[in-house]
Length: 115
Image (cartoon, rainbow, N blue to C red; front, side, top):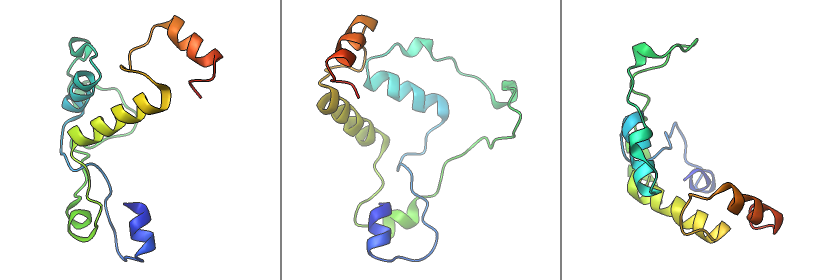
């Protein structure tokens, strides 16, 4: 999307992000589900419980409607984005799953499969 904006010399502010508005918690759950990880390990929490030094908004989603209207390459919904990520991991590293044992990681590192 960024390349298209530059190539077409589009003007103005474009918020570039995924097309699905989702909470941080549900985002983590969808990642766990896509990569067959244990979603039970993801613990929901409230912003008030966090001890961050800097304040953060409860909703940090971006309005991508302008990008959706003007760009040929539209923001992906979360399912499609995770599917593409899964394919990239598989094609780049040759994994069927993102889960690896420490032994598998060391082996792939030694033979240059993981850069």
